[in-house]
Length: 202
Image (cartoon, rainbow, N blue to C red; front, side, top):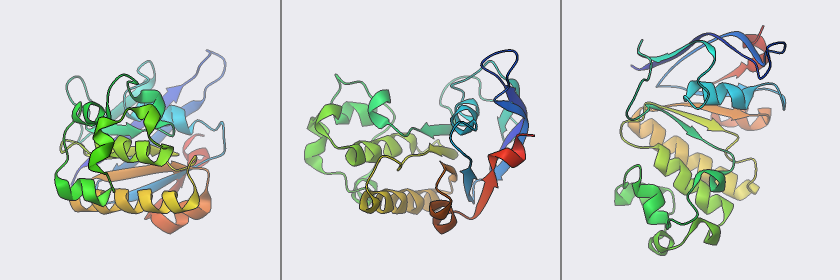
């Protein structure tokens, strides 16, 4: 069993206003946990702290009692806008294999077509890019996925397809998921439990 723990997390963009104040959170890799909160409540900031994209915070984040220092980060972040974190000059094969090349059955689960590998990010839809973004994060060394509003910009059918694919693969691989959303109905449908950021951020 792997455990992700955030202890006494505090962070502010200015010295006078803290977005997060003494937040404590813990989850294991056998759960899909929903993180619910209003816009501007600090959800994305918390995601970036958990995954190491924000470093100048108070407190600590650990996996199995150890802080990430270098190499591959076992806590991977999936963004709402995948096009913003992909090199526009790389084709999709390069984008994906920067992390790893999934086997055929995993590509099939996510509906990845062979011809997409030769295309560039600007030539794919948001849903197609998000499939690649999720697969990039599902490197075999990943222990936890932090999914920050990953289906918000997609139509309802694509949302269901992508979430079904994600939940299928994480359960097969024993990867824990923190699914962040302001859509409480969505979280009620697909998560094992829901955490309210306001309850953590006191």
